[in-house]
Every structure is written in C-alpha cells, then in structure tokens.
Image (cartoon, rainbow, N blue to C red):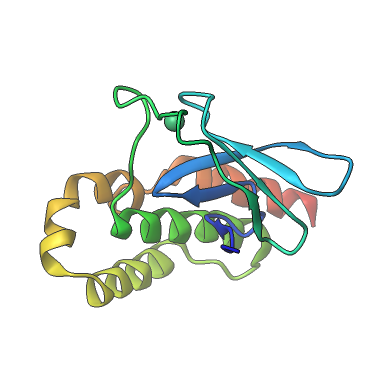
Amino acid sequence: MEIAEYLDPEKNLVVYDNYKLHRKAENSNKTTRWRCEQCKSKSITVNSDDLIVRKPSRETKHNPKKCIKYFPVEKVCIKEYERLKNEAKTCNDFSFSKRCREILQKIQAENDPREYFQSEKLLESHVHQYDLQSIQVIQFQHAISI
Ligand SMILES: [Zn+2]
C-alpha cells in the first residue's frame, strides 16, 4: 500500500498524484477522507498508519480548468512553506529572512535547473514572495500567547 505524502507538519494537506487534497471527515474506523477542494470529486481514504486504503475510481477526473497539477519542485516548495509557517508558530528564535534564504538555496541545489527555471513563476508565489504579512501575524499571535 502507498504511504500518504503530507504537505504540512500538521497533516491537513496531502499530495496525491501531484494534486493537493484537503483533510475532510474522520470515519468511525479512524480512517480519514481527503478530497480535492477544486473539483470536490477526487478523494482518497488514509488509515491511522498513513497508508492509502482507498484510491479514487478511474471514472472520477480532476477539472483541468480548476485543479492544479504540481511540478515535483512545487511540492517541495509547498512543503517548505508549510514547515516555515509551522516554525513561525512554534520557534522562539525564528528568523524569516534567514530561513527563507536557506530554503531557497536548498531547493536550488536539489532540483533540476531546467525544472527550476520552468517553474520559476510558480516558485515565486510559494518561496520568493512568502506571504510575509501572514507570517508576521502568526509570529505576533505566538508572541502574545507565551
Ligand atoms: Zn480536483
């Protein structure tokens, strides 16, 4: 059985077949259902060991106009971005600019330059232009909660 690939440390997002699925209902047998929020038709079921116990049927299709299929490098960017948001919430000595630089260098070093170049525009939305304001809001909320 395939292992679910989570995009965020809190396990609210999963990537399946290069599409992002959101956590939906928890079933009585402790499995969880994950669904594409754009087409609302593609869904999987994951058990408590993070194994995919149900895959979508072949008849269901993503909507090519609405659903976004990620490049591999984009998945990395989203994972890093989600981790960064998590760090902003949990680390006391979090440095946004330092971590941003580190992540960018890591992504550039580990990914095919052609692919990196191709998806540069998409990367910008995830890495170059981190949503600085929302990070600051998270940090502020963390600061006032401790
Ligand atoms: Zn979809």
